[in-house]
Length: 266
Image (cartoon, rainbow, N blue to C red; front, top):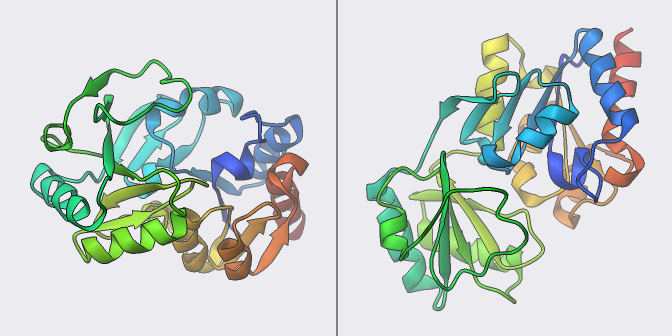
């Protein structure tokens, strides 16, 4: 079947290492969409980090954010769908991880703010976020798009495995970092589920989807899509799971994929 939709991760995949979108990638997105191919950004990023991406890519289309928990309209910069962790589950998540991971520290992403425990040291700019500093039990007292659990200097793959074991079916744990950070979504929520629901709405099957990514939080999406692509700079597990390889994020790997998909379609 021909590819009708290309789903791409952002950081480390579509975006260059400096966080920008190359001219070639911008042109490839426009060309693919003009040729009838839907391009969907599927990211672990919260919506508060999407404004610059929306501007760089023309304020059109839909993005799947927060590892599948949010569907976001890039034209109007509004949330179309939200699958949060509700407070009752959030409290259980915190308790389970406190018991299993001594010294763990928490933060939360919510639709209108970022919250963190006092011990959570910020990395990089807060990007204009409305911030709450409180203990985790207070942070999760309202719906949370993602709960973040952190243990610095711990291998992220091992940390996610331990976190998921402790959580069981309570919630979904993944990571997209090179340090000890776990990203936790509501049970069953992943990039794959967010993308699958949107594709179904468009009448597009998994066999008609090519997905490209670089980190373990992309693995469910790559497993679901009919064509799984890794950028050259991808995590070893992503490289092993992919059907094919494209160039790195700094060498326009997503643009190369989009150009190839469009050429095959034509």
